[in-house]
Length: 149
Image (cartoon, rainbow, N blue to C red):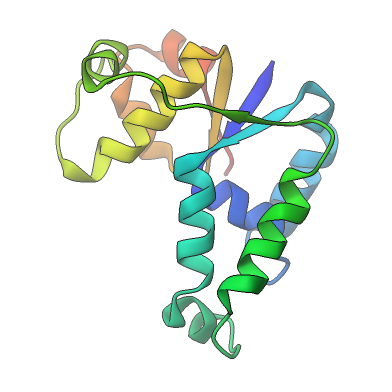
């Protein structure tokens, strides 16, 4: 099974200073042979977060330039097992896929990512256990979601 990374998983993999980097790297080293993916949301979010001054401050760095964040993204997605997944469905598909229902505005991107993963027979990889509430059953969560602890 291929894995779709959410933004935090992608940052943890690509940014050695991230607190969850080592955990993500160990998991990735064991699992990447099955393939992994990103999409427009995760790629844009990666660059957006890395270039925020607050992110640099958190890691005691100078602000990260767009060119550095972009180069780091390109280095990671050039991995031979990486695939890019297109977001080619509408919001009705999201609503019908998320059997647990959406409760608020903060779930929209997660719901799109989860729908993208399911439509592409992937598991969504995340550190956010709350995403599981988008699916109604434990069986669905086990099949479509991988939460790193």
